Image (cartoon, rainbow, N blue to C red; front, side, top):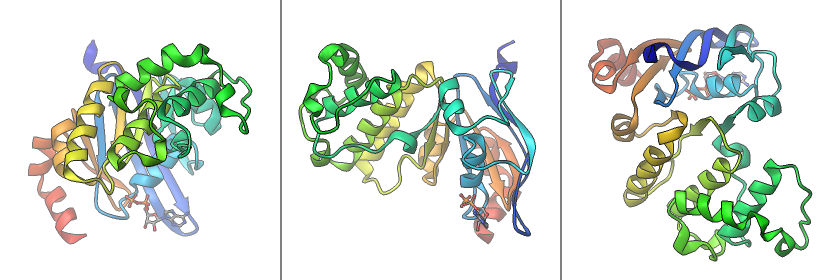
Length: 249
Ligand code: ADP
């Protein structure tokens, strides 16, 4: 039954900071292969949720399951090894290295090979074939030999996504992928996210609601740490409580 194919779930997820409940009993079910968006006004608890799901923060209570396995007690590195990768974790792009060199390094790190930071050109060309295919996947082939630091903003984001894909995530958590982006880059990165979602699951926090409407299969709306609504964009955008939460924010 495809509708029951949940890759990541949170049950009654709760995070309390000294006297303040940032995330309060959140249930979340992300279907395998979907693009799922987490939205809500500022302070809703979206970032805290991401931090809990990737175990950057330890939940006060609640449970997280990935592929049916309880991962609530795991450390961030173990979560990554299981196949959940958050975009910023490895989005440190080395500006003076080329696009190709950056992706090679990401591949090397995945395999745990040692890397000589002072002589990056010594990175084994054994990674080239896979690196070039990741670069092609994100549309950066014409920029393969360009310095990462000289790429336009949207292309840099594409490179970050390529280095993330090098870790072979089954599930990708994207933290505001469109933040600070010009309109033409938004369109390009949207197309890229759609393309890479073909064989991966994506959970994203995104403020640009037209991007959310365009990309998401399913949306969870948070407000004041709680789930306010869940459904398709059409469903949640008609929900009076959602409209009020955004207006009241
Ligand atoms: P969002 O990402 O939706 O804007 P956050 O998850 O960043 O929301 O924050 C939710 C609430 O939790 C906010 O009121 C914020 O001030 C509070 N919060 C987040 N992190 C901490 C922290 N480390 N200590 C105390 N309060 C926090």
